[in-house]
Every structure is written in structure tokens, then in C-alpha cells.
Image (cartoon, one colour):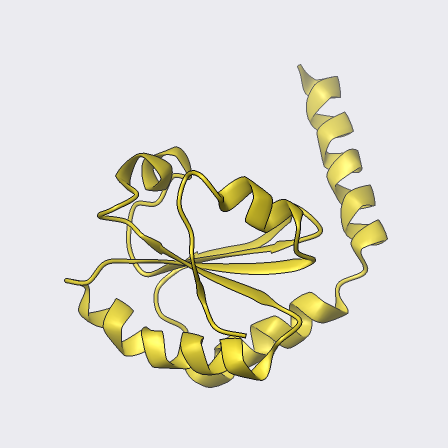
Length: 126
């Protein structure tokens, strides 16, 4: 599967309609972004079951600000509509592959349970 261009108009549907979504926030002037791009593209070809999206932070400035992007490249990974990974910096190809493997292995019932526990604890402190 090739990468997809993500905008404010299609980000919600992209996350909602796909089990695993990896978003790459980038800009054309960003050297590390350009060096990371071939690894991201190669992973998109190797993992047809994963949705790979690219967000041009220059073109999608309000969206990038809304999502709190402060440096690029930044990767965000969603599984079943839940943000499970977020990190600034270009990952080496092997680390990107390891990340994808780990995200695929996640027990999402356990993830949802931990989120509920954390939210309950936070509410109890309020």
C-alpha cells in the first residue's frame, strides 16, 4: 500500500476507518524528514494491512498545531482509534519495523482497560 496524503479534511476518517494508522508529520525543508521518507515508503509497501499517512506540516499548519506537533519528523501511531505511540525524530528502518510489529501485537482490550483505570484514577484525584 502506498502512503496517503492526510489533511484536516480526511484525518478523522483515516484513523476511524483503519485498524492501524501511522502518521508521519514532515516538511520539504526538513533534512531528517527527507532521509526518513524512503524508510516510511518502504514500510508502507511491506505492510499492506497498515495505513500510512503523511502530513505536510507547512500545508497543514492548523492541524499540526491542533495535534501539538512541535518538531519534525514526528510519528503518531493509532490502533483501533487509540493513540498508542508518539515520538519526534526519524526512526531507523529497523526501529520502524519493530514498532509496527509491536503495535500489531498489542492486546487492545488490555490497552482500553489501562486507559479506563488511568481515567478513573485521574477523576478520583479531581
